[in-house]
Length: 336
View (cartoon, rainbow, N blue to C red):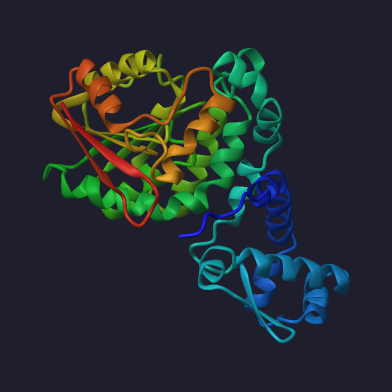
């Protein structure tokens, strides 16, 4: 088999990747995907529908076709199945709102300073997104709700399948947009949810609870997850996309507090990006470690054996892990 000659293509693709981000962000801001879904599928029609120059419409749509977000036949553009599902604003699975968080100035700036984070092994001081009531988490709560809708429903099904017959009492730690607890309350009309997070973030969760019609079974509990008094009468504690922000020692401290909040036999459900022990597969979970390096003092994408050790040290008797298909994430279920 002949050797493949060296190529600089990976270098150019990677160093220019910011252009892909900019093109996608622009298309979402201009509502180009929704316009194509409504039948405005030529550059002239897109120019009129999106109130942009025809040359701009053509070049942007061609570039999105090259990337794989659109298809093109002659002069006509169409959405791919993925784009129709996730990027048409009229789709119930629309996730374009995630741009508000994923391309926020805070995150972009952290990657501009990545070399400093690599040298230090994490970020320090005012660069730390874990500072109390950081505005980035309001962006997260507003922007990421669309992306959380499907995994929230799937996780709620797992929670209720393992739940006791009695009315369920759920603690949603670092609730953010609140959709994970809200999904449990929607699927179980007898469940009550206590959402814990910073007060500025909880206003977004309360709005979502009201929109879902579960506000009478949804309580906001403001404060730090490490300090606020949760009580000790919960059947389920939800820890969604939270543990990866902290060191193993910090997580063990938090998980002892979680265990104390559970009734005997209660369960903690953690949703996480969990790589294999080689730390390079699967790529979506393994690459999440870089985000933690750039944005937290000591967070990481932990392997399941590492999470097992944290839960065991906190006193949990059994810890299991499974994929939350078709999402990219895994669910850890730990029993008191």
